[in-house]
Length: 85
Image 1 (tube, helix red, strand yellow):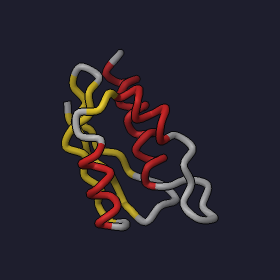
Image 2: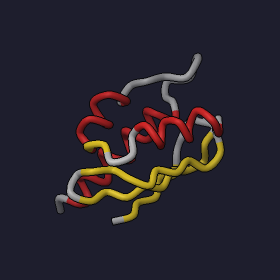
Image 3: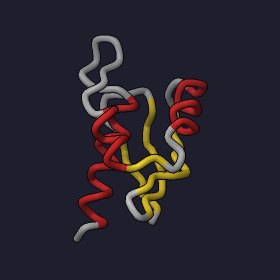
Image 4: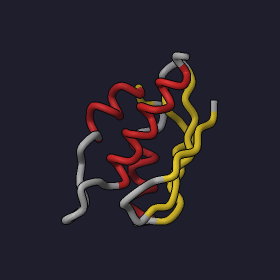
């Protein structure tokens, strides 16, 4: 299933991805640090959703209390909750 998440507190505006059988794919960030976010997307292609959440949750960017990676973890966690309803 495809999900879209509006980010908060980051340079990226939103993230889209697919969640199927607890695996995340087709991650796309819109806005933000293009090269770094493309790398994150490639590295996490097909990754287990629980791994993404546990690894990236709480990462910060400079003085900000969040980061694009943290926002992805939040988005994946919310998608898991929706999928389990």
